[in-house]
Structures are given as C-alpha cells and as structure tokens.
Length: 344
Image 1 (cartoon, rainbow, N blue to C red):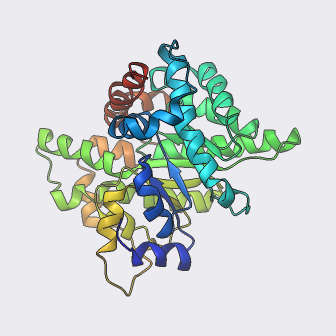
Image 2 (cartoon, one colour):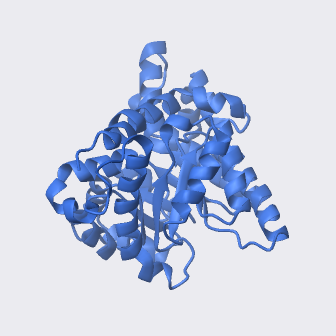
C-alpha cells in the first residue's frame, strides 16, 4: 500500500479511528504503517483471502480437522484466520486505548432471523480472543441479539446495516444492554453500529434508474454520507456511546466527507490508495452538511426516505430492505457457503 498522509493525519490529528477492511495478509503491514489499529472481516473476506493464497494459509490450517463439514468447518476456518489476526493485533489492544487492537468475526449470515442462534454463536466467537468484535446483522433479531451480547460484556458490531433507523435501534440496544451489564457487575465491551454507506448508494442507484428519479449520480453518491451524518448528530443528541462505523465505501469521498468524526472507519485497501493521492492541507468535514437540494432530490425516492428518516422503517422491516437482501446473499453465496466447501 502507498504511503498515506491523509490517513496518518486523520488518525493522529482527529478522533477518527481507522480499521483495515481486508483479510489479505500482504496488505496488513502497509495498512498498519498508515495508522490502522484494527481490522474488519466477514465470511466473504475470509473466503477471498484463503482462495487467493491457499499455499500461504495451508500451514495455519493444519490443525483444522479435515473431517469437519458444514458450519463446524466454517467456524474452524474462521477461527484460524481471525485468531491469527487477533494475535497480531493483541499488542495494540493490550495498551487499552478505546477502539484499538480489535479484529472482527461474523455470525452465520444464513441465520439473520434467529436471535438465540446468534447469541450462542457470538459467545463462541468471542471466546477465541479478548480482542474479537462479533459482527451480527442489524435485523430485528440481530438487534435483540446485540442487546443480549452487550449485557454479557461482549464486543459487538451490528452490520448488514444501511439506514438511520437501523443504527438508532442499535444505539438504543447498546444503551439498554449496557445498563443490564453494569447492574450485573459486568464491564461493557466495545460497541459499534455499522452503516454501509456505499452499499446504500449502490442500491439507490438502481432504484433511481428504475423509478426515473430526479436524483442524479452526484446526488446518489452522497446518500450514504447524508444518512451517516444525520445518524451521527442524533447519536450525539441522545448520548449513545456505540461508535458509528462507515463501511462499504466506494470512493475517497466517503471518508473525506466524514473526516474528524469520532467514528471507527472501515477502509478497504482500494479506498486507502485513493486517499493516498489526496494532497494537504486536509480538512475536518464531519460538520459540513450535505446540501439541502441534494437531500430534496433524494427524498423523491421512497427507499431513501426509509433510510434517512429516523422513523423510516420499523425493526421488522430491516431484514427486507433491498441492500440487506443483496449483502446477506453475498455473505452467504460468496462467503459462508464457499468456506463450507473449502478443500483443506
């Protein structure tokens, strides 16, 4: 990866925290040299890294029972990859700084409606290392599981999340779970509410074309940014202490427009490389609003209204939102299921 003055500035001079969004080992050193202090993974990313370097990973997978099948096999592969990175990040974690030194592991995307299953699996994933953050979907069932995991003291992140209503539900679940944890004498862990800004833009681009919306491409690429900026303001108003996490970014603009925010930012290598091309002086932009005329054109689409308005969806609608269906399918078809078929 390129030397990245933007990311070094952002992580040194602002509250923003940078997590590397990849499980490819060759990229780790460059990312952490540029200020990364954690990393995000999911079934898709783990499958991609194993498939891209089977020889390199073979020695680390030697302990995986070749007779395993199905979910048991996937979990052991995840444990090998996530455990490797958790060990590498442990020295950062042990320094005790908030949001630093963590690695993610994600629950089974085939079970996004099963609260009890997700809670049980989250406890298993969390047992692998103290610096693992368990990711679960921001469905109604996932939000219930999230609260239970907060109450149990786990580090948790709600993913498959694209909208203001979803992250607000997660913020509230964190608040309730934290009260329960503290009442039981349990120290609450790290809490994250993901908003996949670029994946929302991708979905709305198709919606705009299908509905012949007045929203232009320049409007579309600001939709995710508008949603996370609105959520950020509401989090501050309500005192939610879960960290918002922009993810699924599609351009440097997604991170530049949020620079200075007290967020944990999931940044893929290709986005980091685009940011490396930025020339200073760099600017804090989190408090710069998306122009109202852009919001007005986006609001002509009902799907954007669902994403942008705090009460745009009820929790039972989260699982049916278009971006959620697309992303869950990718995590299953290009992540969990291929890992189950992975040849050891």
